[in-house]
Structures are given as structure tokens and as C-alpha cells.
Length: 248
Image (cartoon, rainbow, N blue to C red; front, side, top):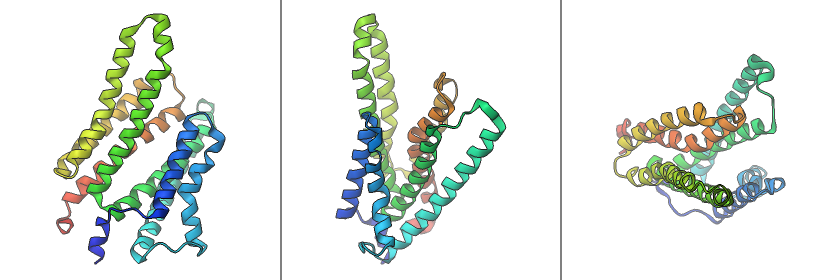
């Protein structure tokens, strides 16, 4: 019976409400209403707090075990990221100034670790990889569109039409891996996982190195987590799936 549980595909009302709050909070934050980020926090942490207080009982035994296991993974990921950050800041001295950006980095590391662990346990690696890639691809599509619209005035003033064309092509190039590999994840999981790992390495080199330009290190790391994190996590899950005979 438990072996069939990860195949569930219909989210509960609580999950839909939580996901809506997270998406709304993130969109508000991206739109400049950063003081409303707590809305995303209500969706991300509210249901878990209510469950631990005994005020919400919508989880069966399997879901409770998966959530607790995901919480332990989040503790490991967030704790290690915090220790690593403190060590790097101590080594670099004043060259890496602590800022609110680093708090966002640690928060996203912890929350994304929990989310991927819980989703993989709930849906299974293939469905999780496909849906996560579609979701993050959609978010990045909105980001690319917003960037192009926001830069339209500059393009008209400078007359640099080619920069807009190049920017559009680059944006499309960044989105293709999300949507194409979301389709192949259910058909060729191990091959798709290998491609995702390769793309993760390439994106890490491009955006973590010279591609980051003069951006602060905290911004570079945050970009890597948001862009590379879904690809890397999905790739590892898919590669591991095919190496376990019992998974079939």
C-alpha cells in the first residue's frame, strides 16, 4: 500500500491554499512589496505549525513520515549552509559583507530542501522532476517577460534593438531546458537526469563566474540556488531512480 502512495497526484485543499499563499507572497515580493513576504511564510510554514500544534489533522501516517524526513533534510541543508557561510565570511573578512541577501539565501536553501524532499516522497522522482521543472520554468518565463518589458523604454531611447533581440533569445535559451526536460523526465529518466546535471554545471559556471559580472556574492549565490537548484535536485533524483531496481 505504501508503495502506491508516492503516485498520488491530486493535491489537498490545504496544499492548494498553502501553494497559493507562497506564490502570492513571492509575486508580491518581486513586485516591490517586500514587507509582504510573510504571506509566503504563512503558506510555507503555517500548515506545519498547525499540524504540530494538533490543530490540523490532514496527514496520514505516510505523509507525516515524509514531512518529518523532509524536515530533517532541511535541517541538514540549512545547517550546513549556515556553517559554510560563517566560515567563508570569516575567511574573506570584510570582502563579503553580511547582508539581508545572505538571510534570503539561507531561508531558500532550507525551504527548497524541505520542499524537494517532501515532493519526491509524495509524488515520486519522475513526476516531481517534471512538475518542478514546469513550475520553475513558468516562474522564470514571467521573470524574462518582466525584464524585457521593463527594459523596453531603454531600448527605445538608445535605439539598441539588437540588445533586445539578444536578450529575448537568451531568455528563451534559459527556459528551454525547463520545459523540454520536464517532458523527457517521464520517458527517459536516467538520461534526463544526466542532462540536468550537465546543465547545472554549465549554469553554475556561467552565472557563478564571469556571467555574474559585478553583482554581490550574495546575489550570485541566490541566483544559482533559484536557477540551478531545481535542475540539480531533479537530476540527482532521476539518476538515483534508475539505479534502484526496486523502483520499477
